[in-house]
Length: 221
Image (cartoon, rainbow, N blue to C red; front, side):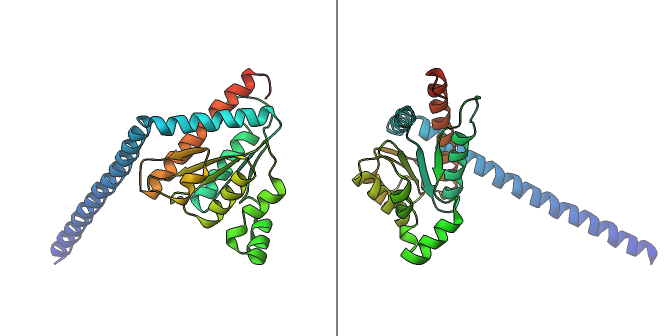
């Protein structure tokens, strides 16, 4: 009887191990697929001359802005808000080189302003209202949206463009409202939200690096 129970336990252990192996195989497949998708989009991006031109145009505009005493103002919702705050932090702190702090504001960072404006004027106004207070003529305004249709980001870019301030938009492949509002349109060749966001932060890092190098070389930072 004892031998039978022992046999059942051993069988159970083997079965559990088999299930875990299957789960591990599935997990590895999911990881491989995610990495493969990322690489595929990155390769498309690498071949996209219009996108690279837009990235260069934004970097040039930021260098010019900082030379004239301007600043970066950047915004987005959700994961794009995190990307905006990340990019602002790279300019305020440093990206790779020791240098002076460069002014950059992520509009989602002030939760009191966001909630007050949202409560009093509606969520569509949370960015444009802040631009009315912060934005100067030499600034660069950047909006991030995977859909390219976020109403509050669209409203902010419309306002900045109307005021003659340089605008940039980070969006996905689909035609969107922000396409016509950006002086530099960074349009990632993907319709997958995670892949778009991954490319956005990579490209923002590249912009930060270009700007930082130029400012250090010119002795401005």
